[in-house]
Image (tube, rainbow, N blue to C red):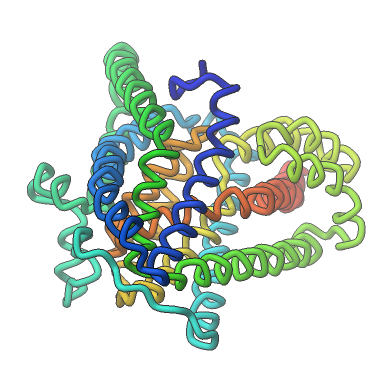
Length: 416
């Protein structure tokens, strides 16, 4: 069994069966919408409550999962002394590259949604989201970042204020005595693992609940869903490839390694990433690539393990692009506050969810809903994720090695 209460064999099978059932549900629903076959129309109506029940079971875990992941993740980060020069430089490069990814995704996404025709889908009336994007005054939004009533914030699903409070609690916990910190961390870790087991159970029901939700949703919306899905796959791949090229240029300008040398040096790790779809599984190959690029030993001994554990470059890029794309699809107007809250939440959680794919998925659902988008749209994302995953992993591995190269230049020169 893994940390989510699912055996590895079953987890691999579910990773294939779940998206297939989602795609089947969308396709059958689109056919139902166009044909209006009485039997299928009736079936869609009967299956809708089942899909909503499954979605609610996933949604209920979002807020506590985000909170507990941040508490355990931040409280167990290495201290300044333990990080040292190499660790500190690595963290700085991680944050800089994440901010660059968000900026590129916002710019490219804005251009794409305004220049390409994207089918619009009427969001289900059953789904509402947080009101962050509806706040008229920036001053009100800023003052609301620290909630006066934590329970009320949880009820509304205002994820960023909850994330901030959780992060502050974790920082305070780091200053507590060792004995007290151990007690709280032991309890928090137990809660985290229990929630992840629960989320694992819900995810196991994806073929049933996801099919029901996708079928009923597409039966109301029609074939536009399939067109939108195809558009996003093309857009997602184009964006990741373009950003990958930008990483080669960054390494050339900042890391002082020629693009051709860097490309040849990291190719073995990219091949492993493409096949395994796992940054962690690609780590041994990344270490060898770092050595072939003649990077200092701390690059492979400190930076790369930190990158695999903490640095999820694709989150900054793909999460932001998903937000803009599906906001356009569902006709949701996004204000700067909603975008900022979404991006900050996703990046914060990305540092706190190493190797926990179901946990990351559930917490991203919360950020997605808090921005004002319907939870049913999350099923579209789940359907295309297996197609985008190989490129996501290649981008992460490329980003990890780019961070190692850039960190090496500054950390090594600082040691002279």
